[in-house]
Image (tube, rainbow, N blue to C red; front, side):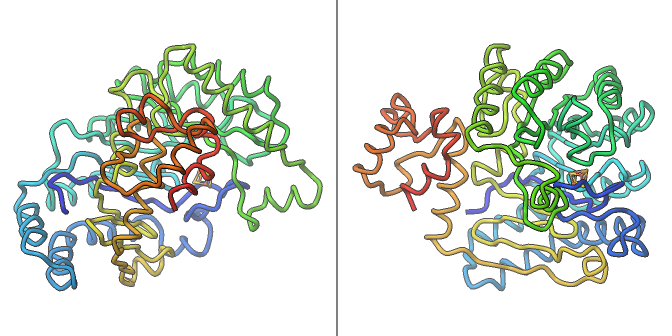
Length: 395
Ligand code: SF4
């Protein structure tokens, strides 16, 4: 069913330099896949897609096999601005490479097509060495109220392994400016990086906890075979860390954050109080609906999934999105995989469960007993670490 509120995701596939561990859909500004295209043309295509979106989506739903009066009505209601946009997330890539003029164009396009809720959470990902006080002040005045800063580590050796362009001093300046201006600040950190010890990780966490921030995401380093860091590990330049040690990094993060009064609410996310949880990402994990704009961006509306072409040049030329319609079994699998990641959990009433498997998960200490008694499947800390094993029981 289509609900009235939507999130918007905007993808900016450009970075100053491609980091050695990254396989996101993003390109170095000098890369031929983005150069020649440059950000002006990209933003023009983005605004075009945003302005066209309401009509295109209504047509999609009307012509889809699964059209129902309720679905079409819901889209029509949304088009005529009864439905609201509750979150906007500019991700990438490095959205802070956009000029203020680009951002004004994008927000204008959004306002022309949709109604944005007055209390909408508007997040922008930022790389610490791409912002200064003036820039942050201007984007704040455009309505961006949450800044998600890609810190990864406060240790210069680890930043070097990750091939990042910034240094810890850049982070401290960016956080202080953002705090003075009034942003709600989130930091992204990475653990399990070659050369990282528990001591280095602990220092990074403690430094982060001293900053005026409200949200932290901690991700384990995962590498696809093709990225330069994976090749450096294969060649023996760096040594991959043992899985048991990587698990200890996660446990240490959870312990230090909990001790400082922070709460986990998703496997990789902690906040300083409920009101600072990322509303945009929570909607994603809880089966909300969103529209994705830009190269490679995905949209999720009821049982439709649309994915734009990855290459910025294809996107600018107007190559259409690929559409998939999920069947009920695929929707259930998606729900299990996403909702068991959060502390809100998966409600048993929504699905048929095999009680012997549930009993086994309890025995293995992968799910929380008191939540289960309330009919909700919520992972324990062990279940968060072994999430793949947990979901296998339901698939
Ligand atoms: S800055 Fe982020 S998105 Fe860009 S290359 Fe590095 S890790 Fe990837």
